[in-house]
Image (cartoon, rainbow, N blue to C red; front, side, top):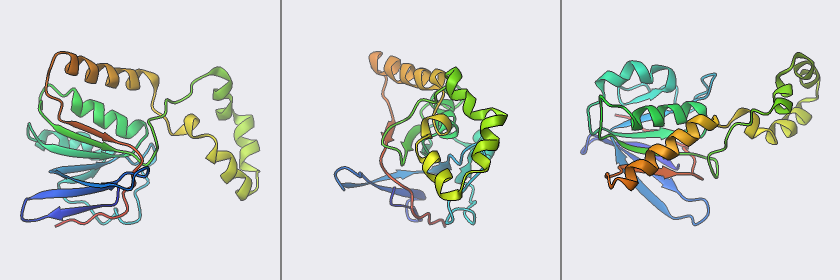
Length: 191
């Protein structure tokens, strides 16, 4: 994701993305932007001041939802559980059919969260104590290799999202959906 700017003449946000693999840029126009900020809200430095009615983070998505008209164009930024929940929720919303959804992610793909018994040991009190005492540089290296333990999407949600998209396409339903990995949001401009 390169930038999000408000196009006042259109009354829409212009979301510009650049594919990391090809460097090819594309711009999508949407009415609403949702930032998937994780289980503990962590907004990018450029986003906290941005709280117009058309831009929200996951905790307030549910509150803003009744104001989303059918056919609204919505962009979701993020690759984890929060972004996936927003995407699926809007994709399957019986009260607001016809949303145009765009899902942008910095990750190169959508990672399933690992739930094996051995992996869950990383959340045990003993491991937490061990990790806490590590030097900061070592913690950073360890965390870099643990994305599937903490940044993924649960299997049920990944499968349900895939099944929903597959079923709709198999039935010939129009899909107003765009999923774009390998891009990063670096700026957000609002009216």
